[in-house]
Length: 144
Length: 437
Image (tube, rainbow over the protein chains, first blue to last red):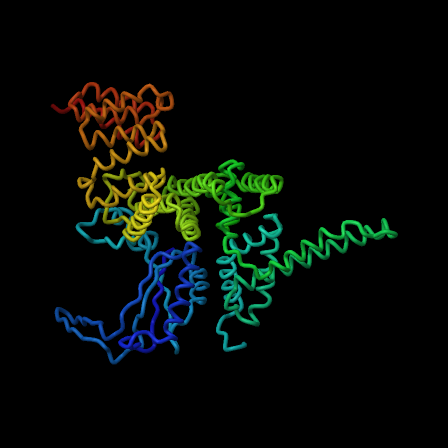
């Protein structure tokens, strides 16, 4: 199964002055951990995301769209990065996730979300619907 | 509840077992290298799991669980060797009390060697185990079973279901393979230099065999079968992580990633196989395609750097990539595919490659070229009863407007195929030759 591992920062980290020595140490630990994931055949993809100052949020209410520029007052749920792993089950994902280094000084949080797979969709779609060609670019995420 | 642990015991148990699973292959690899015995390595690993299950609920999972398990297992190995040695020694003492110097060395020196190696992290034990399990002296089905067992961690029951066999057969196959390895005195080391070049193809062959076992399965099969693809991809990714400079390892990985990208798109609701050209490309897994294209690009760059020609896996991956890059079937770069088949036919000649080469050339340069190429190989005995040959010939003739001949080829192909669905498809094509023009 494929899972998305979302790394959440508890505070919006200011990178404008460049990374601190502690951060560099954290990045090195993260690299070593990623190396382990690669050698175990678990790693599929990963990326780190720039902080809230460079982010935008779009709030939809019916047809109305409101854009909110970062940094945001509410940073509790700010996603700092993600990885995609291919694991046998959630237990294995958890076993790996617990070993991920905590690169932030304070408290941080990880969230593991399994991808929808074709088998899951059979619960609310018939095999015919699933197989029906979808037009254009729909479904290009290639998950189901 | 030390440290506010919120897990209930069964969950802790499961969490520990999951951690163990992530370490198992490396653990067995390290122990096999020390003990020169896969069975002993598996037992010691199991013992280490039992220790972890009794210790970790109290102490918590250590920061480096792999090192903990390895150290525990090695200590255990030393203990048993010492105990065996003592028993032997006592027997000898009873038998020959007066001089008592017999065989003192062997057991103790092994224990000392293990002690010395206790913190030794060579890092390539896993690779050594993979190469040993895939040793060319073993039959390829035994290699596949053993690799799935000791590297993939599958149970013999799972392996049996995956290969449509039964548990006793697979268990026996694994036992025989282990015995053969012990008898040959293999050292579980990663071969170097020429030896490595010579033995790598048998490793790649096993992984691709496992992959194809899964690829041949259909949605209606036991779920274990399709999961062989994932298992093979995992092994391929592992291998690429361990041998990042080996173009053919990357080539095989690229090939598997790209082929796996079509897994969900290649069967219809009724379970029928949908040919590549008719698949809904929106359903391809584009994440895997990108990974595959990336691995292929690295493989090709490494080959070029070394001044070599592409190997058979990189070439097959390049072929798969041509289809993956085409957003619609009509965009397929058939000229490039034809050129790649020319090269593949030189690197890994086979009648099936020749046939595919003929098809590719017909798509790129017209049905007459296809006919000429297919007629060159029509007399090869391996293809005599091979339905795809007359099917391809029928298609070339049909496209060339020679309908009566096409009709007879489609009928021949329909007679040769064992697949009912394919037969009705071919008969429909034969009928279509009557109607037109």
